[in-house]
Image 1 (cartoon, helix red, strand yellow):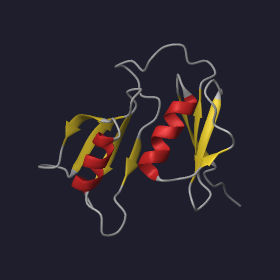
Image 2: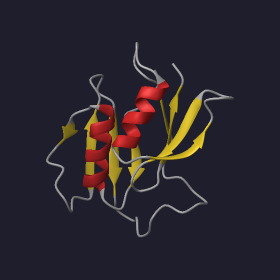
Image 3: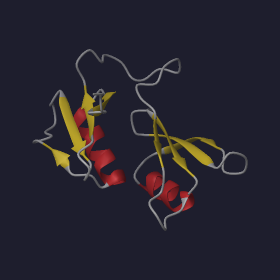
Length: 121
């Protein structure tokens, strides 16, 4: 017996925009229709893991006192932290904290301010 992780839910003001942004970063296919105005949209990894963006109950942008979710991403084999940070920035992410000199990761924020890290290889 036991449990397995089904999906991770991210609170979002605009689930469709968030799902489409993360789709471009991760390359995972969008699930369902993912239309503007939908209250939930998701991505699904090749392994079947879902990243769900959900707007019910979200009434204001992310504040400094709380994170809706925090993902740690590691570059795929052969990729580098620098390449993936540059790609995320090109997609509209912003650097929150650059720790490449000390701890080997970069904290970024997606377009709604949700923080995530890209780790060193």
